[in-house]
Image (cartoon, rainbow, N blue to C red; front, side, top):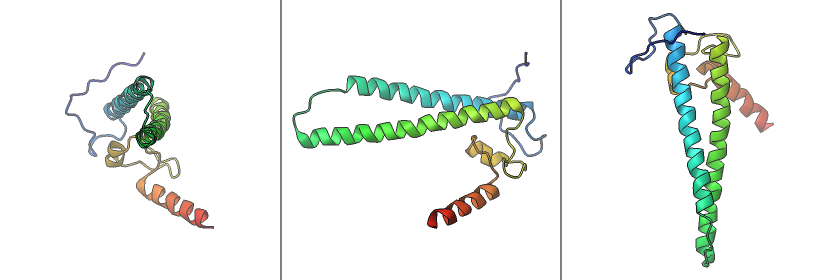
Length: 140
């Protein structure tokens, strides 16, 4: 069984320590798990709200407005469901020792990028190239 890694509440990964050492991987693992819990709690709240919010609204404009709000909420939750999948994939990469490295180039993803977007799978440069290629193909 893996030994628990101590992290102080104010710990932030630094460039002057070994890349993806135990403290850094534990920091990102905890960050991903907290994000996942936050998303799942929001989903539970939405489900409860949708179940409780079913009511008969006689005014057609008010009903349409409420249905639009529900559709927007469901779209938002669907995006968050996809985020949970990406979080799970990132947690798997941590377990496999692949977290923090670009899937295209194998280069290190910057700590600042990972801190801002812990599910990142590419360096900023590789992501930009990928998006440019995607845009070119989409325009065809």
